[in-house]
Every structure is written in C-alpha cells, then in structure tokens.
Image (tube, rainbow, N blue to C red; front, side):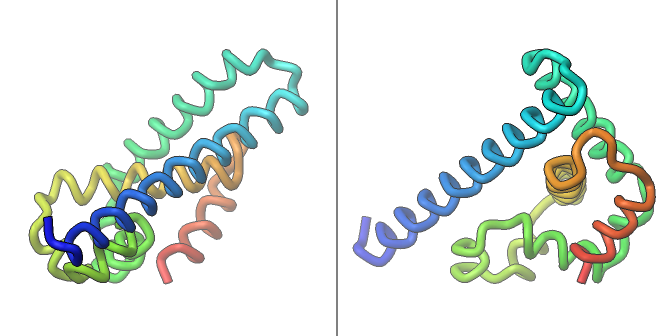
Length: 136
C-alpha cells in the first residue's frame, strides 16, 4: 500500500475506533443514569436501551422526515466518518450508497444519538428539539 493510502487507512481506522469508544461511553452513561434513577439491574437496562434505539430507528426509517434532502444531508454529514468525507466527498458517498443503506444509516444514527442524549425517557418534544439541532 502506498504511503498516502496507508496514512488515510490508519487515520480512518483511528476515527472508527474513536466513534466506537464514544458510542460505548454514551451507552454506559445512559445505563448508569437509568440504574441510578430506577434501581433496575444494569444487564436488564442494556436490553431496554437497545430496544429503545431499535424502536426509534424503525420509526425514523418509516417516517417522511428522512426523505427531506436537507435533513438527509445534514445527518449523513454527522454519521459518515469525516476522513472518508474528506477523501471521497459527502455527495459522492451518498450518490454511491443504496437507498436502503442510507435509510438504515440515518435511522440508526438518529436513534442511537437521541437515546444516548435523552435516555429511555425521551419524549416527542425532546425528539423534535433534537431533530431541529441535528438537521441543520
């Protein structure tokens, strides 16, 4: 692999590792806070958080919200690793991805980040505020 390609690959892998660590930390914080609030066992809360993310993900994918080009682009800019965007360009990435993959990416990113921020008790108004923020 050429030096330039190796440098990109190394930085891309580092960014992915950072993303995974960040998500793991956020999920831990949600579980920890819910345990403190409710006393529910953490192993049970792991499933509850996962179920909540899946529920919001499916609702997002079924909604018309993710069909709006400006919303899609704003969220994809947050969901796709920056190194990849710098290398290929966000518009090129989006144009090359199948629609099902785009909807899955959008739905999962919105759902996970929303639940990590607002926990399992988030409501429609907090979701509205969250979407106002991330779609800009």
